Length: 117
Image: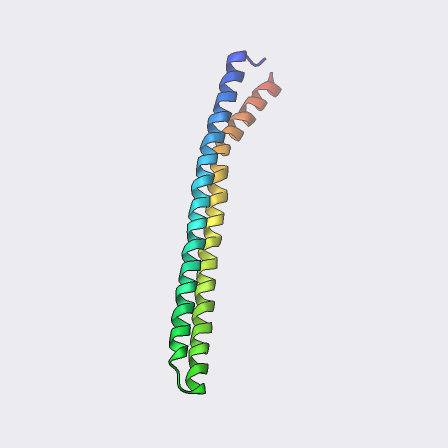
């Protein structure tokens, strides 16, 4: 039979785990939002630089060349930033789950003790 003290201790551990998990989740979200913000800022800066260069072009050939370079660079940046942000989401999921691993293992151990008695 489970004692009241054990039940209270288990409840306290769950609460502390939830608080820790929420803190990790918040940090992860902040990192993701920062990455999105940095990417948006870079995209705007790159776009402005492209428009500035394009405004000084005197031939169609040079304009096409600049457009091609800009498109390639934008795509490469998008792919790199998407990968980085995707990894942040994976880290977020891992960090959010990590505190729960201890609670789950304790719960499973308690369950096995109850079923064996």
